Image (cartoon, rainbow, N blue to C red; front, side, top):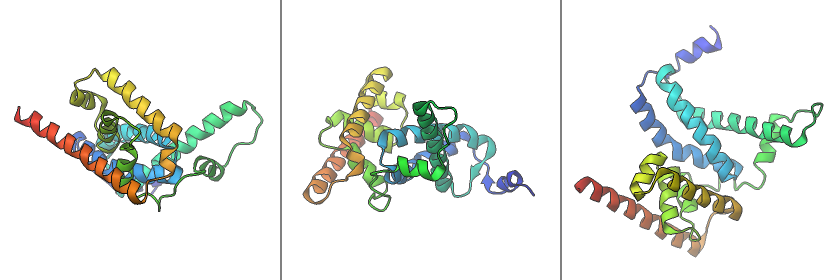
Length: 216
């Protein structure tokens, strides 16, 4: 029995809605581990979004794999290796230059990362998205997009903004996170307590706005 045949037995059938719900539930935990391992929020989040899009397209056809969180993380790491290798090849521009090994690429990509043991799963994403140097609206938008896994259209509707405007706003917030290197150092002590209070505030806002929309 080949590897492809074996993989069939490790999958279970599921429709698009079940796959979407599963990916939304898995995404925060897997993304937190991914960012914790490599530290580059912008790179990791971009790669991971591509992985989620591919899974949402493929899993309803091929089935949900066993250990779906591990599969998502493994796929994301492989995609990151490919992206870094392409970028490095373009930078060198030397056809005869030796190819980087996967281990070298992972070491390069993970330089200065906080480490998965420092990150606290999805809570770390909340803490990152609710940095006090970001406007309240930006914090809320990031929580909905990055942690909540909502698409641009739904987040734009939450703010009653055109989708393009919302995406530019979120992109600026992401750049601020990257330029500040915030993903490489999470808050501790009093700063952490203050950040948790802001996380709760954002969650209350999201809850209240959603409840009001349902009641309307």
